[in-house]
Amino acid sequence: MSTFQELGLNEDLLNAITDLGFKTPSEVQEKAIPILLEEERDLVALAQTGTGKTAAFGFPMLQKIDITSRTTQGLILSPTRELCLQITNELKHYGKHCNGLNVVAIYGGASITEQARQVKRGAQIIVATPGRMKDMISRKLVDISKIQYSVLDEADEMLNMGFYEDITDILSHTPDDKSTWLFSATMPKEVSIIAKKFMYDPTEITVGNKNESTNQVSHEYYLVNARDRYQALKRLSDANPEIFSVVFCRTKRDTQKVAENLIEDGYNAGALHGDLSQNQRDLVMKSFRNRQIQTLVATDVAARGIDVDDITHVIHYQLPDEPEIYTHRSGRTGRAGKTGISMAIVSKSEVRRIKSIERIIKKQFEKKDIPSGTDIVEVQLMALANKIHKTETNHEIDKHLESINELFADTDKDELIKKFFSVEFNRFFNYYQKSKDLTVSDSRGSDRDSGGRDYEKQSNDTRYFINVGRKDGFDWMKLKDFLKEVLELGRDDVFKVDVKDSFSFFNTEKTLQEKVLAFFTDYKHDGRFVNVEVSENRGRSGGGRRDRGRGKDDRRSGGRGRRRDEKPRGDRRSRRSDNSENRGERRSRRSDDSKPRRSGSASDRPRRSRRK
Image (cartoon, rainbow, N blue to C red; front, side, top):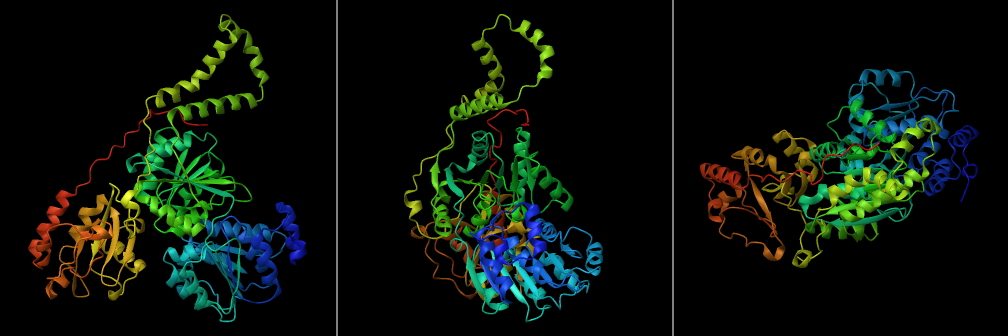
């Protein structure tokens, strides 16, 4: 292992490294820093979250820029506000001995006027989110025409969030001869495309294998009925008394609901998602870092800026839509050389997705049972005993001992211990003594071998067929944006978008079903009818036949070919007609027949006192 001195860093940076307490460089730093210091070239670096990527590009950039100049020489793009602020703060710490250094963060949710003022004072390095950066360029508030170094940090996540066009537009305002450094945890094809477009013969370094999870994290999954997810989450928390965790949900609505339920049940929990203001997000993150919040419930996008080294567990309340996102999630734990545990709560229909994730991360999941009530009571009791055993005696209590001894004069030692521990023991014992077993058997059977893409049919999800696809100019991102715009929905309200040549599929929560179907009754896009119908999830072997009798009129109403494992509900013959009145009747009937059932949300656990 090299030392930072051997990497070729100058004295100012080495002094900062000493102040920060860094001992030896991480693997990605050891590989990247000498290359970036030695020559002007493009670089693609693949390394997991928490491996020190910011220092890997931060130190070389700080050493190579001219601090005496007020010209912007470095641009770093990151996907979220939190990550943007994190990188800015770290660069300031790295350059604390570089007199005259000015690093400015540009991000949404803050005053654009103030950010422009900071840039105008002379910012050698700008760290920005793509949306705000593009806005400031269009207003001519920044000049990046002379930058020498550009960094795309968390490139895969930026592309996954739909920033491809913004990045393209931003980089079009930069010199062609600049050096571009791309850092990413995974290497999907979209990242390969952007590397080819904006980089010239880049050097590639990889820490571990592409898309592979770090060895510091172990992976577990727990098989439960979908309706028992929340109860399973609480048991996993109770079975780990010292847990300090991030819980991932797929949508903002689920994130907020799970956090509120945890708080109501006495857990120190908080929510982090895109609907919160910047001030709210800052307060939540401050509470989490100070451990006032023990369980942070977050969406994938909002969690990109979480940089906390001591997270013990990542819990996937719902698996991500894309397997690669799992790598980012699990990277929140097992940071800075520490170990962590990644737990997935899955239903039977999701087991095959576990196998897909295993292929991506090249790690095996261990199937475990949800802890029983008896197990949890024992764990909590011993945790309390250990806590008491390690507690230092406060001698201020001595003046009260006489009164206490009088009270317990007739109580022997064993009885006193029982009484003392029963204060905490009774709460868990009474709650869990009649609790049911949440673990279900892994009887996948035909579901495992049904083929086709596996989509979980949860009680609160609806999957739709829509008769537009790639031939109509849509990819998954454009279709998602189109649906979000016309239906006036949030970005997280449309998910599992799957685009084919002439048709597509997408999901919303079931509460939005009536709105979606009502909107697309007689809706036209570019002069043709757009038809949306509720889709059933069936295996390929169970898919219905294609209707060979469709005519040209049927194509307009959505009769193009469908994937065999997903076919719309309703009478086939009635769908052949393009009569709008018949379609309206079918919409109404479908909406009535598929009203969401009220799922039992009552906790099987009484409200408990909040953890300290």
